[in-house]
Image 1 (cartoon, one colour):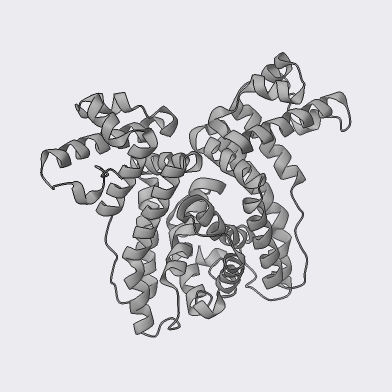
Image 2 (spheres, rainbow over the protein chains, first blue to last red):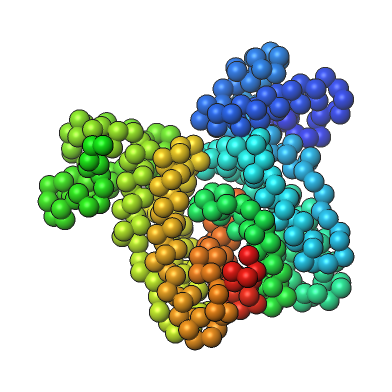
Amino acid sequence: MEQDPTAPGSIRPGGRTARVRDAVLRAAGDLLAERGFAHLDLAEVAARADVGKTTVYRRWRTPAGLVADLLVDMAETSLPHSNTGSLRDDLHANARLVATTLTDPRQGPLFRAVIAAALTDDTAAAALHRFYDTRLTEWSPVIESAIARGEVPADTDPRAVLSAVSAPLYYRFLASGDPLDEAAVTAAAEAAAAAARAGVFTSAAR
Amino acid sequence: MEQDPTAPGSIRPGGRTARVRDAVLRAAGDLLAERGFAHLDLAEVAARADVGKTTVYRRWRTPAGLVADLLVDMAETSLPHSNTGSLRDDLHANARLVATTLTDPRQGPLFRAVIAAALTDDTAAAALHRFYDTRLTEWSPVIESAIARGEVPADTDPRAVLSAVSAPLYYRFLASGDPLDEAAVTAAAEAAAAAARAGVFTSAAR
């Protein structure tokens, strides 16, 4: 099997390869946010990034390959978990981060575009699932701390609680169109906390 | 303003107009499920439905117009709410309906396609929001009955509770890729019920 030149391990931070990747992913993100996945064109990405077309085609191959690497980058650079000392406040911080991201003038359309890509392309879908996996793992200590403090049952599944915080916000963003306002953020955090305290997300309940 | 020939009121059930619409929407749904929104072609829909191309172009105009009318039809023909006598069981029935729909071999890809359409087209997005609005309204009596039985606070918002049931299932379907299995159905219903009982979805809390 040939080596994957887009694998994170192959990138030397600060080197030419990393600079090219940064420029290409920035251009790809801009174009996705502006026009969506259906109009993502590798030649245009290369021109915007001021990088040779051949480099972009050889390294990312397809629009979906570009989306996949962009999601790796988004997972690497997204914000670390909070540590407020209370489950309620940590889940509120998580809900606020999700809502802020989805309503951001650049990030909102970008997420819309990568999710649209994942709905039509298996490579993009696998990359999207890895992105959420990374995010859910990054924030798991919040639930482990709540278990240690005795706020929720010992066998509470961190992934289930954190998914429950994100889910109502994504449902508004992708399905119902209801606003991602402060009330939605509060309800998402409070509902997940109430269900976790009631033992809904324990392995025994699943 | 010219009359909208796709408005439900203008269709005589059993008439030629209704038969044409049925055939066109069935063909559109099949093509969407098979190939997705990006490849939805009006001429191909007309050929599959055995309907004149001009009729399809004049009446539905664009692929997004077709998706919008398909969503009207899906809302009209989707299942009525349950009435089990318990909030927990009604929410479980609702969660099961959502999961069954999203994992159905035809309906699953069809929902993927209409949501992808909504992510890239404002007409489709507005139609999708109306679809969920209709579904949430159809199932609201389930929450009103729970209020009448004293299972949840009197000012509980039906839409918020029902959105909370659907949300984790859609999050799996569209974002995390986690399976839509029986455990997910149970957790979705139980979490929404626990949060509703705790008063998270009351107007006072919002």
